[in-house]
Length: 348
Image (tube, rainbow, N blue to C red; front, side, top):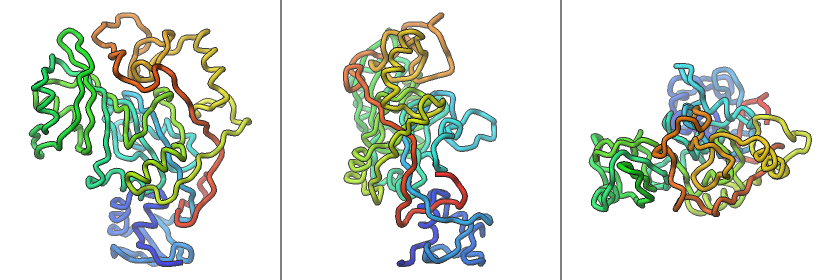
């Protein structure tokens, strides 16, 4: 097999992104055939070389691509020194060691992809790809057309002017404005900073789309595999992943186990259960039935007592199927493919 750059092998293994893998190499955490390698660009034969990270050997792993509907009040990292809830807990049942593609703020909900394919993550996060990210935003103040135009042209921030964005007014709620915003950058807390810079403080923020993938039909705190069609569309538009894989098929013996993503056969049961026991939170506007209590974004707050009308999201111009949704099954495993790697001994 042809030799491959060492950081690329580590990225494909799901050990870390390629940039983080370069740091691991530079700091002496990686051994090849028993020898510490610190030179970036070192090439190895991943099928023949013994590669270890901090003493743990890297072997073949199949690629996994997951969509998580992140709730508010959850950190989008695999560990938080402050002890706050993390997406690692929500992804505990994924049969591979995955990590988030980018981040969402602690109080921002919505689309968060996770994978063990470092090339896939790097490809979607690279600035030159200009991958679109769509948000539904609630700001304090009534935005006029000229204010929306300012966001469309770009807002001057301390780290430079933002790229042009697409902004669409959704509705007013007294002195508050709901809008849909699409940006192609990945700056830290960009939308909130845009609001502060223009005098429209962001009160609620949810990412409803990333690279064409949405959380439609997926409750807050739940995950599912990306479908082959979704992966094919992403590959066509952005060049990743290298190979489109089909998600695992559901296993009947896993039926009813908690913490899993949605399953096709459970849809009817969940609908019947919703009628008997109305659920709380989760979902985006228009996609919830009348039995759902208002707690948009899947936050910690539960119940409907004490709610104010201005805290409720717009119920028009957001969503795709007029309240209808579909689910994708989960469970099973993926066959390992050439050119992908994992840590030996891990399940999946």
